[in-house]
Amino acid sequence: MALEVVPISIDPDPLAPYAISPGWKVGDLIFLSGQAALSPQGEIVGENDFDAQIGQIMANIKTVLKAAGSDLDKIVKVTIYLTDMKYFPKIIEARKSYFKSPYPADTIVEVSSLALPQLLVEIDVIAVSA
Image 1 (cartoon, rainbow, N blue to C red):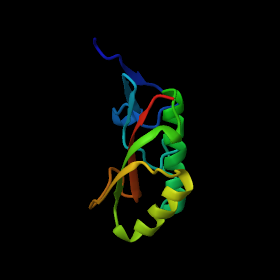
Image 2 (cartoon, helix red, strand yellow):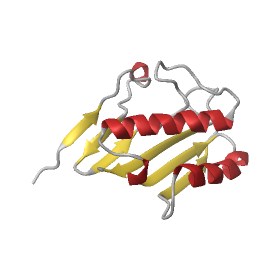
Image 3 (cartoon, rainbow, N blue to C red):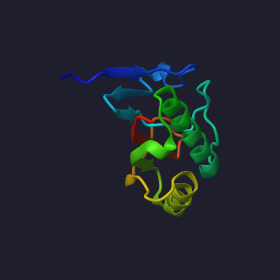
Image 4 (cartoon, rainbow, N blue to C red):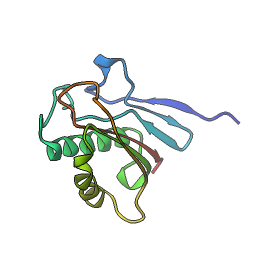
C-alpha cells in the first residue's frame, strides 16, 4: 500500500521566493521545512530580538500545521538551529511556553549562520495528523 504524499500549501507563502515548500504530508506524518522569523509577506520579524523571532516562528509553524490538518500538540520532533548557544535558556522557556509534557523529541545545534544574516534561530518539526 503506497503512502499518500501531499505538499502543504499556504497563502501567502513566505518561502516561495526561496523555492522551498512549507512542508509535506506523508501518510500520517507531517514534515515542515525550517521555519524562520519571516512574516507571511516574507519580511524579517524581530531583527536582533530573539523572543520576537521565536514568536513569529511558532506562528508560522502553527499556520503550516493547520494547513496540514494538525497543530502544536501533534509535534513529535523538533530541530532547532541557533546562531549562538547563549540563547539556549530562552529555548527552554519557549519549550515550556509552546509545548506541554511529554515534550517533543528535540535536537538543538549551533550553526555559524542561517540563510539570512538577521536570523538568530530556525526551527523545523515533524508532526502527526490531528
